[in-house]
Amino acid sequence: MALLQQASVLARSAFAASGLVSSRVARAIASSSNSQAAAAQPLAAEDEGPAEPRWSRELGAIRTDWTREEVTDVYNLPLLDLVFKAASVHRMYNDPAMVQRCTLLSIKTGGCPENCNYCSQSSHWSEDTGLKAEKLMDLEPVYEAALRAREAGSTRFCMGAAWRGPSQVGPRQWSRVLEMVRRIRGLGMEVCTTLGMLTPEQARELREAGLTAYNHNLDTSPEYYGQITTTRKYEDRLSTLAAVRDAGISVCAGGIIGLGEGPQDRVGLLLQLATLPEHPESVPINRLVAVKGTPLQNQEPPSGLDLVRCIATARIVMPRTVVRLSAGRLDLSSAEQALAFMAGANSIFDGDKLLTTPNNDRNEDEQMFELLGLRSRPAFLNYPSGNETSRDFAAAGSPSSSSSSSEASSSSGCCGGGCGSKQQQQATA
Image (cartoon, rainbow, N blue to C red; front, side, top):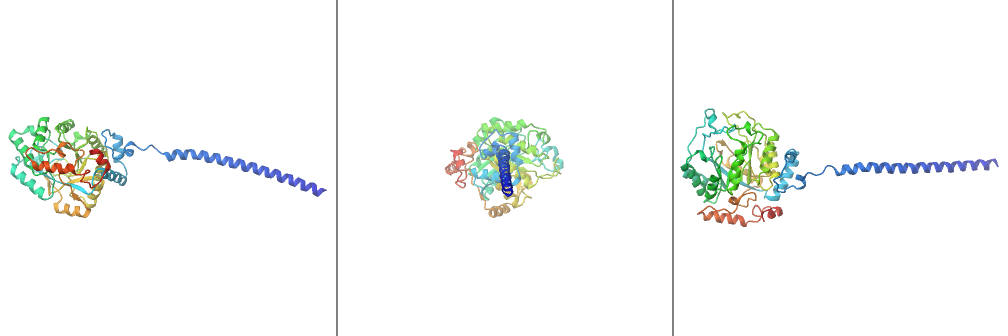
């Protein structure tokens, strides 16, 4: 009997214990479930992350309302990420293998009254640079230089005069420049000039002569501009660009890096260009070539990767613009230039001289084109950011210009069908 009572007590104890365990297990499971649910909440919020910025959501969109914060964010991306995004945008609108070759000729050298600290042609330090002022070239030598450039493969011929503007010279010299434009335009080449500040009337005369584009660089940011020159204001530059644009001429405007500016000034320059009423047809990005005798003679040039960063940022904020890899290529390797082309550059200056500074040898550029699989862009293919002058405008009395232009207009896409971009076709429709 005692054994029976002891077994009963043990059974009741085991049952109670099992109930206690079950209760504890249940509470533990419930507690674990609650903990997991609580932990899941912050994980969900973490997964969402910060909102994707507008510029990233709308990568490749044509905008003129960029903010400084947006351009700064783009510029400060890790370099390889930046190049990848820029290359993606580049391929939306351009054939990445097509690069234009341009030739630049100084038709009036030295004696410029401006005091741009980087420029060897300023009369303010001509004794230090040893550069003597020359007269405006005659028409025939300029025309012959354009012929040689065309035969060598250039499709755009650019002429620069060391003037404050045409208003400082007499009517005979101005008429000679207008005739240079007419004659070279008659070769079926694109024609660009950089002659200083223009009035609206002078811009209209250049358009009537057949000018394709007018170059007037902003140089740097509005905030840093006073450190570069004091003989003109930033507003003067913007007024000339407005006169060019209003005359229907394509705008070519860019800047120079390596003037002693900081990254915020490079952002400021690109922001200024990207928020113009219309994006420029062309944006030259120049790397300082320090000239002995100028105030910036001892300025260290920026690295090739600094140049690539600026080109890539320009490509993202101005997707359809021709980004021109301009001065300062001479000591860049083929690899650095290849990265620049990947990032969105689609033009170079060839020939052994740029105004007064040395440039890459034309044969070296041809070898680089072959190595990288690049080909030269023909004249007057569609410029989606250009005015009429770089699309279907023909100079008076120049049938060849008209035919060249109509051939370009009949090409599909931005580059004769090379990129097959749906966005580009929609943009130009």
